[in-house]
Image (tube, rainbow, N blue to C red; front, side, top):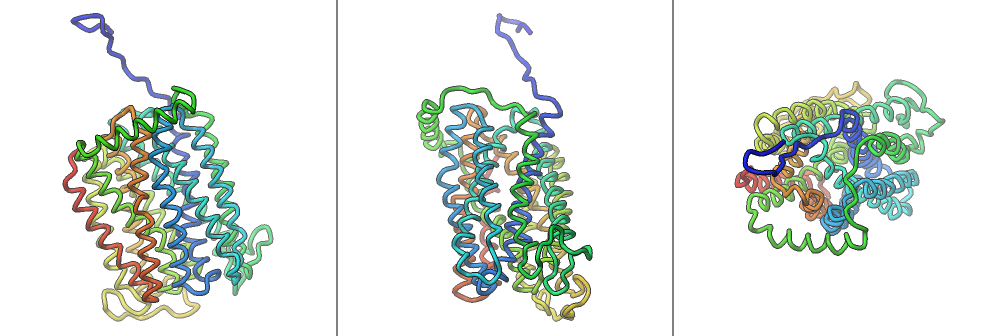
Length: 459
């Protein structure tokens, strides 16, 4: 269309069709079982209770492995993001790091109960899978600005998170209902004997979550590769390496001048560390504090994921309506309230008030403390999803459009550069005090500091 004063042309950006957008959304569906099954509700608590010598040392070891993976991600993510911006394409990176996720997760089958000799190899497999899923997510996030107009980024991000939570729910239902059985009764949550002859005594239903996560990712990430368009190739990889590193240096040197962006990245660094640590240790904490087994923790995970599904979907709409900063602030306030109350929950008390403890072998979640933990978990699930979705939405609003993967790399850097500190502190304090509660208390400081920095960010 001609402009009034000359021959310059204004162009309207064309976005891909519905199939491309839906296929991209399914990446979250494909990746979520790793976080749901492995890091939170099934494998991590199983590791702490049955592979490690005891729950406290299991929490500490898991924290050290999470910290090591987080350090690798923190160091490499901005560099790889800058190279991806310079080279153009995103899918090859997603495929390569997705392969690490599949290999690492599948190898976690080796984690047999009561075998401490396998712990180093098992934690190495966990670290490899963690690196793979996080880097694949960086490059998947960087595709967002090409899929929908700017005023729909919040809805796209929230819908992706909500869809991921649905995938997590279904994967949990599959594991609890058909694969993981109580070692004493030999029955799953639905009263079945485990499929494929999985042995409850060897906790094969818990261990199968690794290979299942890998297979799930392969199946459900495939539509994204088939139907979602990639960025065009800009330059060969060798040239992209030099160009990407030069652009990264320029971005880092100019970051102090972009005060709102710098403050947001710093705030994200702190509150994401708290959130990731909360999710990573929530199941382990429940296993040790309330004595929950896989069935109870997994059922709790389903309830929490349902809350997260609605939270992510509603949060996306609130993001577009009120802006991502307000969604992030409200989410952090609720998370802070939830973690403070969780620290007062024991088998026989809530908020320092004595309650009747659960009866051994009694109905599911019959104890008052258990029900309180479920309510608090729902608050965490319902606010954790919009917090993460609105954070990537806010980054897209603040970052230069021609360096979006690079800034998502910095986003991952700020989400991971201190991500080893949270698990490390939890692990170290838990090991020093032999108290899971003391280790988890450190998370309060992360959410308070994140809130204080976010208050100074201008959209």
